[in-house]
Image (cartoon, rainbow, N blue to C red):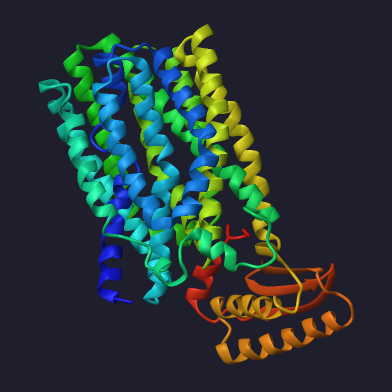
Length: 516
């Protein structure tokens, strides 16, 4: 394997990641473009977002099957083509339907684009630098924040000169993004093949099955609700701010002030991302509760400013402050989740996990956008924020429950295999890999492996063939252990000493890794 090519792919990944987060340049003036250039009303904009998410949900399974068939490398290329087509449709689409198709193309590309994250993690493993994933992921966030910070200064004036200049820059950027997609393949696929080939090598699993630990289920629910609520809040907050500014000032002043607010938010995002590894190290799972409380406070304050401080300078300031706070908390939450989602050696598990996250967000997104659309058809825009506050209360309750579970015994991995003579070695190797990955010396882990093989062989000889072998990796107050059971009967527990900071980092990164 050519390490220089792998290094080049890893150097390119942060750029691709930065371009995967949004439609660069266009996203700064998206609401202004749809309302001022296309002439859509608030309810029409909400309808575009609703149809987009409904279509994305309907296409989830299709994209999942395509990714499993073609693998990470090809998925990344498709994920670069779709945004390029999307911005062309949005910019030049003469009807609402064409603009909606453009939005669907971009949102649906999310599953494909997210495979770049899995590919980067696998490439790091090939060069023995898996523990540097947080660093290169943060670098992508920093590049994105830097680009958007600069674009919020440049794009509003360009938008005033020509309403289509931001879109032209976006088209140029995603043309370059397509070029970079060809330069960052998942090199592990050249060793073991693509997802379908890898799947055939795995033993005792149902087609496309996904098993989640109880901790994983809570985390998925909390994160999916937060992401959907945060995105919907941001879009509607921008609508409310731009509408209020248009009522108070001229069109030129509206564009400049709105651009300034977005620029400040991106500047502070950039600052947060410079310190992101230290923030995650210090806060760990507390970032979940902080994000949930921030979302509740933002919804309440924006609602208050919309109802009681409408068309006033204090109202605009309040809306701007809470909008900026939401932008600051987004990246720590997102990075925390992505780190854990791909921290497994199986590409099938990585693909399942990333697609499952997108599926959960799509389901909740449809509910959120449908509710917002109904509210806008009956009431005014201000009334959506009390609804956001109510959902935020549910999010806080789930986050508190999650915090309690985090202080208890945490299941990091829960997987099952079928005990057969052919699978015996595979089961022993799985436990061996877990022991070494979490800090046990290889010599000691190897002795455990031979011991496990003996005990499993004994089970086979005593009529336990084709029974389920359950392997659970869990953490209790900092001590990591592996529990092995056959047919519901526990046969061994191994404690893994935590001797290095890297082991703790792996535990933190794998908090969400209970996937099979």
